[in-house]
Image (cartoon, rainbow, N blue to C red; front, side):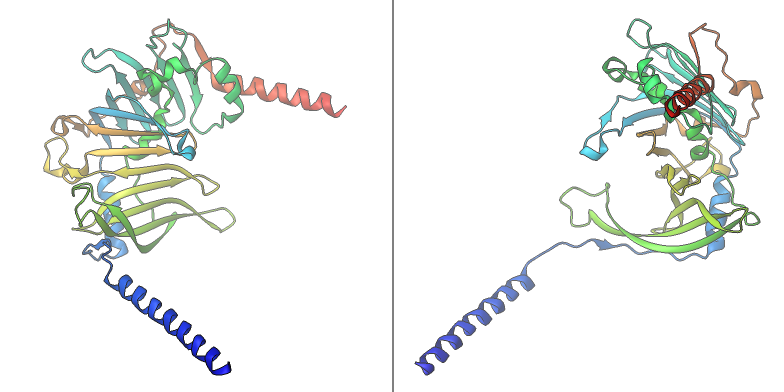
Length: 354
């Protein structure tokens, strides 16, 4: 019986080893496409700093653009709202001035206008296809936190409602200052900041290849350039991160801007490069810019309609970036409303503590 038992164990062990062997052979022979590792270029940190400053030479710009807006509020649930594109006219000028007009395609009538002089922003909602109840003239401060007003604003129907989401006025909820740093890249400042270079590889899909092409999945190399600002207590905090595509040269592909807490304010993707204004001095500039604002839960892409007609280098008066309510729209002062809400909350807390 002992011998029979030993033979049984040996037989079972042989079956297990055989199964593992043939299973292993099948794994080895199984065809599995892997990402293609793309050839990369090398560059020192000085080269990356020079590339940022090259883009920063653009001091002002005026352009006609195609605008596409995406509401990413439902991104955690795997969905998003994509709105039809609109025509836009953008004027930007350093240090942080912008005028943005949103127009109905073909008809060329203004849907919304918005400006920022670097400190204050103003937004005029001119069309709403809802009987005029969404038409407003909104004034606020760029660096103010209006999160406490969210419920109040929703009640006023400034941000909500199915009707406004079904038409082009979704653009009117944007804030103009979100696009100044995207279109006018700020130069580096080695005296005030510390810059650190690193490298990563990222697996991506190459949109130029067919969906079934074995070359669609690629492994692309990037340089990261972190800008660390020096704080009053001698600590360092990240303010910007630049991504440089290393395939076929060195190209600024992405810029991330961080807030005081280290959270992302803006995530900016730069598309393929081209020549703006028909001037060789402005060659190799991005023809498409995509701005994602995680906190505001939206994404906006801006594409130059005719790159050769872009105006670069002209000086615009300061008044061009201070929108006036010439339409006599109902005005909403967000700073004033914020003060009222804070005062009411303070009074409520005081009464509760008594």
